[in-house]
Image (cartoon, rainbow, N blue to C red; front, side, top):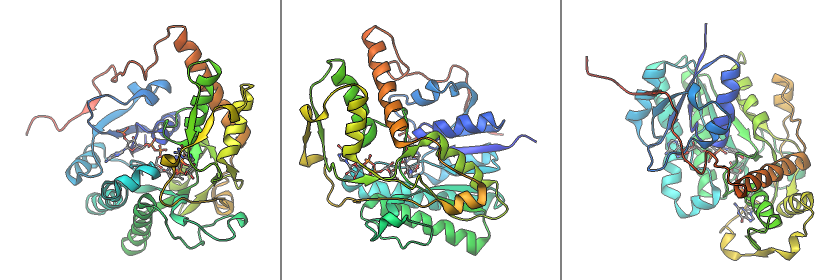
Length: 351
Ligand code: NAP
Ligand code: F7E
């Protein structure tokens, strides 16, 4: 029988890759979107899945909308990817971030517990929950203590704990994927990798001449998003739910991203980059390295794309977009589009 999946945050980077992956596995895919004045379906358009998804309006702040989305879609699996996902912004909007990222997960768990406790739940947890751990080079595991240093991470840690509590207390099949940073050409422009690859492309084409960044010494364990969404799915196919670290096991600095992106286009980053204190956070995580041995052992997950391949492919994709835009081509993100079919599901007339 065809399986049904509901993805919150389907319009985001991971939501788009996961929707494509699940459609390739012949799932029926339902995705939640937020009502906004400007449509934000460009990633789904870029992956050519926009007309294959059943869209449901839902907001993680709004319990009634989640109840409706789960009732209408009757999913076998829920992937809770929706979030205010930008760590920097969480310092400006701690209450909203806590509501969406922390309480939002609580609402999803409560809806499942009350409607159908057999639904399997994937919770998008994050390496940010560790904060600044000592001896990080050994690789952080599912057993490493967590001490968040941002409102984002605090909200995600609340959600992480609730997943464990609902799993142990109510027997729900709920799993936390503790994913380390993962990037792609579909990454939001506010995140440092894409900010750099996009700027390098523009500089090389003469479209700009400076790039302002914050902490160049911060180090992260960066992988390729399309490979990470496969781990989400694998976690929900196991006999027993558990929490898993998903990472490459290697960390690189923001400066390494700069060098790799700019060198791939034959330009010297030092001529263009300045450090801007406004891009720095009140607290920052200095270094993160994950150890995915448990995921490798339990469901044979291994990352394949190297850091260099990842950054070079993002830079090449941004260069190609800007080159084609100069040539007059119009892109989905320039001309916002809605799905062509009427696939927006609503409650319908009252019975
Ligand atoms: P993203 O591109 O920022 O996407 C976030 C998604 O959440 C978007 O679809 C967004 O909708 C939606 N959203 C925001 N506020 C919402 C709300 N109030 N109710 C419902 N949906 C809402 O993030 P991502 O990189 O795909 O990450 C996916 C998830 O994994 C997030 O939970 C993130 O925190 C977590 N995570 C990401 C990484 C990473 O490196 N990418 C690592 C660890 C964990 P709009 O399109 O309308 O804004
Ligand atoms: O920052 C430093 C910044 O915003 C990485 C999210 O997906 O991964 C992501 O969170 C590092 C930080 O990602 C700039 O201070 C320097 O140390 O790309 P980022 P993040 O904060 O690691 C985790 C795992 C998630 O869960 C999140 O959802 O780069 N940095 N200069 C900068 N960062 C940004 N954004 N912009 C700068 O100009």
